Amino acid sequence: MTIFLIWVIAFALIAYFANKRWDSGVSQGLDKMLPSVLKTHGENRYLWIGAMAVLGATTLVRPVDILLVVILVAIIGLVVMKLANWASSKATH
Image (tube, rainbow, N blue to C red; front, top):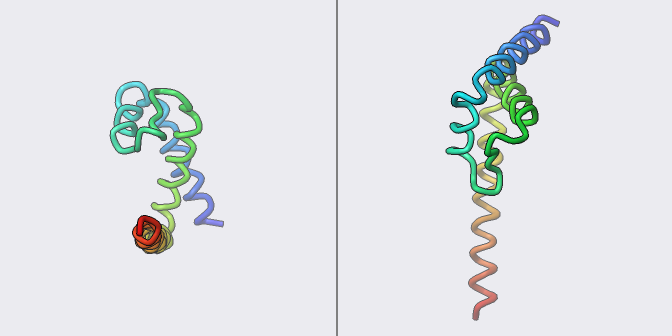
């Protein structure tokens, strides 16, 4: 129960401060990191704030879990990229 309360408090604080600073930097910073398809251009404010708050609170409460997920996603991404390169090289011959 304690971890859940810490997560809720972290979520609320991250969401509050991200919402408060959305126009003065959070939106522009998010747009710099995202690919063009996902750029916010100031839209979808509450969706992005919620996503950032969930990721931030989970990272604060369970950092090892987040690290393992990031490593797993990176490995899967590399395998998919290698398979796509291999398949495209076979398709051109």
